[in-house]
Image (tube, rainbow, N blue to C red; front, side, top):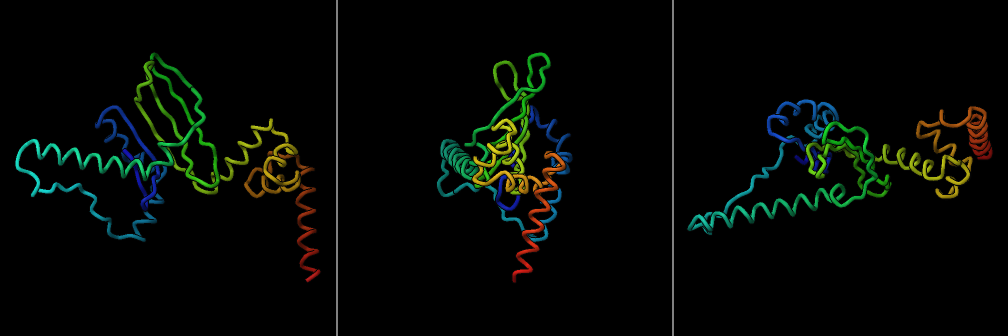
Amino acid sequence: MLLYVADTLAGAFVVPHPDDYRALHPTLLQDFYGELIYHYAHLYPAVPNFRARIDETRVDSVEDLRTQILERHQEWDAVHRLMAGGLLDAEFATQPVYRMGCYTLSRFLPAFDPGGENHLGETITDTDGRLAYLKTFRLSAAQIRRGHLLSRLAAHDWDLAATAVALGTDREGLVLRLDRAGFGHLVRADIIDACRNRARQARDHGIGAQ
């Protein structure tokens, strides 16, 4: 299942059997999407009818009907590939986290590109690589920025100076970005306090100069 909220792909969900989906449907909505669905339900009270339609004027036989159904499937496939391109065409960093019998639970992370869609999620696959379970979640812009900062730090072995150069800023600018993103606790207290004080003095000086 692909779940769209306001014409935007919010997530994908795969389970082995329809009964599994019916059992998990309430948690699927409550886990991540309840607030979004509530919000957009107030903005857009009427949802367009997206049912596929058969052109009866082109159906004179079972073969014609089969052709019509195939065309509708192809149309829907093209729509989904366009709207879900941010998930289907993306590259992910995948890490196996648990194995039980012939099944492996893996989690995957996006590239944390601030300029595009970013989805994370988890899969369960068998030894042949067949998918038994999938759940994804689209990150918000704020979550992408936070993930981008952490991924850049990890890529540079958590070296503040090297990460700052990679991000086009200086060490103090990076520390302040981390602080604004809610990661101030990752930096030594004396360093974060000094950066905060200098930023505060700069703001006060700017106000006084005006």
